[in-house]
Image 1 (tube, rainbow, N blue to C red):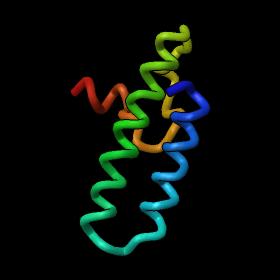
Image 2 (cartoon, rainbow, N blue to C red):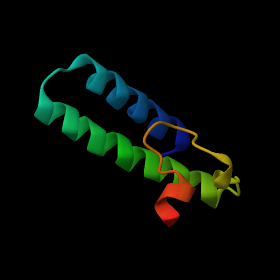
Image 3 (cartoon, rainbow, N blue to C red):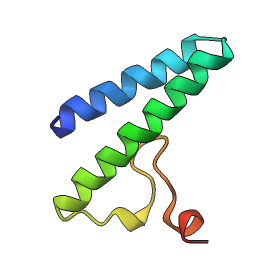
Image 4 (cartoon, helix red, strand yellow):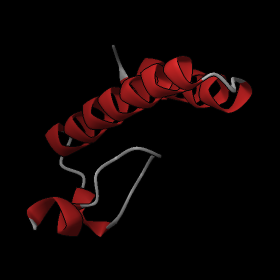
Length: 68
């Protein structure tokens, strides 16, 4: 997937999570959001972007928190 496809899929997952009230689908959307956020971050890193400045998309791990 290229960056546009990843960002689109990420937004669709966020919308899906916001629209459902059932616990299992919300958890599945949460996993998908985190997976896509990680792929977006990796693609940005590969492109030379400074990803340490803060979150770019919802679900992306915060570096300071992950480092603890």
